[in-house]
Image 1: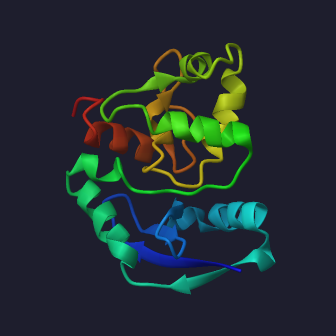
Image 2: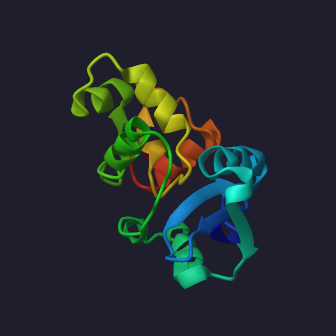
Length: 171
């Protein structure tokens, strides 16, 4: 059975859940108000009987590192290890998201083209929307072709705040 160590931290955008495995690879990062979505994705990927959530304080320093990101050390998330389930296509999209530099954005269509799948912008959007490790796998860095801040499961206000925090949007 997969044991997931979980902690919840306070952020400027509200409480944030951090779940990792016993090797300290992030499995989920989700806003408290969307914990039902997180539970659904955990059940989908690991089956309800295949994992157990165990309370842990700052597992391997991951919670502190996430707090440090919110305090302004933006690069701290670049090397945080993650291990996600999902389909091969989803994992390919999530890996590509990690390559988008802080302070920059990409359109869904551009990401699809980069993956060698021109015309698959909607599929990229769907994979982006099911990303279980938000912020660290920076799905907030993908925007609509016309520059609109669409498609962030944590809410457009949070997406806007994160993009301002990272220097993409001016204050």
